[in-house]
Image (cartoon, rainbow, N blue to C red; front, side, top):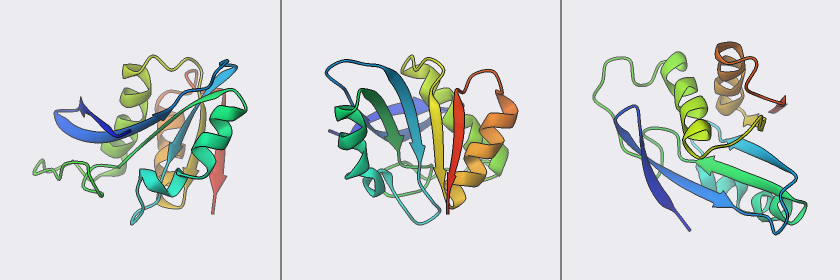
Length: 124
């Protein structure tokens, strides 16, 4: 079920898959023309394996708000969304996966908060 949360004064569309028994957290970041729905198949499978999964529409993508801020679409700002949204939902030492452009955001988020993430996976 999609919910919305305000991150950096922007409404972002979020999907969280909850496991029955949680073993770890994971954040999935989609590519440039993608959306949180890119992870509709893998999200539930990861939850079945015990991962609490967070994915969201990047700013200006699909159901998330478009921004008029001058720096809103710069890598550092979009990467800040990744960190802030995971922290907002109380994710603890999450694993981070970035697909395509999401991989660039995930790399920046890892550089900006190196002690926060358990691992970084780049896909494509």
